Image 1 (tube, each protein chain N blue to C red):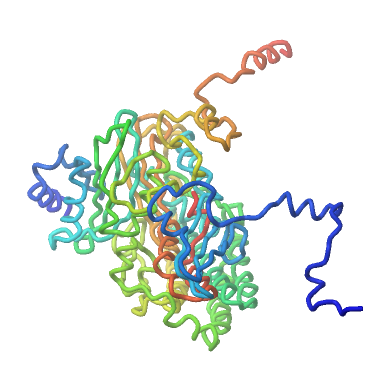
Image 2 (image 1 turned 90 degrees about the vertical axis):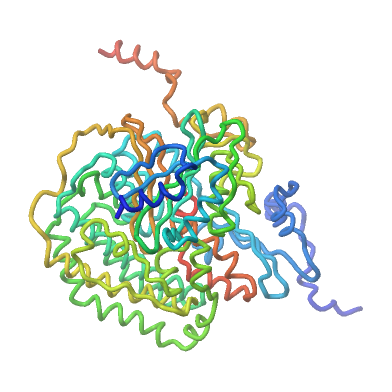
Length: 412
Length: 182
């Protein structure tokens, strides 16, 4: 009698009538190399393996890809040599949908672009329509817009904080930041009626005035917001593992940042104080006082810290909005059916991830002739192609998380 | 500020502009031929008079008769928005030189314009579809794109009607029902 070979249990025979086996066969194997000839030289070069290299398919259902992104990684051992992000799993064709909706309806289509910062997706579209129509927005509406969007910015940044830690293997911060996030979501729900997709901004104003429920929640939260956020930050800022892993990782200098068409916190972390709220003011930002936090290092830690500093500036802006809130109407007088004169308008706002913009062409009918939506996540995600190679897989995920892409915005 | 920019642009690119400079709100708009894109954009990017170093957006446009590529630039020194329209691309074979030599970040935006409009950016190293599947045949944001027909040509068909540009097949029946009920 011979002894069973070691690890024999790993190669045990499975009866072929087991339905689970058929399930396995039906699913097939997911090969990273596409089953068609390469379309470009770059694709051919990427899908040719060098000596000792291998492919790994990450996603489309992978928790650290922030949605449904598929990344084909070319690895040498555990080092990332090259990568090929594959997009389109969440493509809804929002631009085409907008071209087939009238001006008021498009706002609802803009919302789900980025389900973390919906108000910032609505704003450039609404601003561009207002430029086309030459509408004067009432000052109270402008203040309410700033108030609501700055709350949304804090919501987005506190979620970023949690995700960032989650991608580095820390579970606690995301649970803590969801407390913060939920309070703001509840607050905005009492203002707009929705927790996630607010659909709040209107052409010429906002949908509803400030109400008692919102104001009492906001006042209550503002008294403890600073302490609460500082508590959350203590988890990470004083965490040696976190700080050491982030420092010097995925460094991007100023010139590269401009070449990669970066905007927002990712650009400011490379030492460029470009913030469209100051650089090209819109709404009531010229009347408000706030600083533009920048960092010179350009690494993951700098990108994280810039966002943390922005939370504090947002709190300052909200405070000023509450003190200076003027009385008056919240909507400009506009006809129900809008037919702007033929023309073109571009509007950009500074969101939590960078420049959100819309380019609208009107042909004089009640539907936009062309509605181009620019989303910062889409532009920033392609920087992983230059930042990831050379790092370990685990660090590469941290690089991607520090750019803070949202797949809804990437795929439009 | 804007008037000064208009003068500078007129002086620098006078003979290359295919239409008068147009200004509305905070934006200035110039139109050039597709062949002039690399030169004009490089000048706008490099020269101390302009310094349009931020590529804010790159979009394809189908006007129904011609194709356009629209660049939105932002100047570091004068805080101006500039819209550069590369006008008059043929709808049969739209071609324009790529700007990836200045902004590597334009690569995906050009891929998107290729995917949605079929515009070929000469010099882009990786011009393939970005959103739609590789076996997809049509260009969805073109004005002659009609979902039921064009999407069905692609193997991954099964897209529902979206555009109401034809009468629904059951329109007559619905009217009849309404009449009989009344």
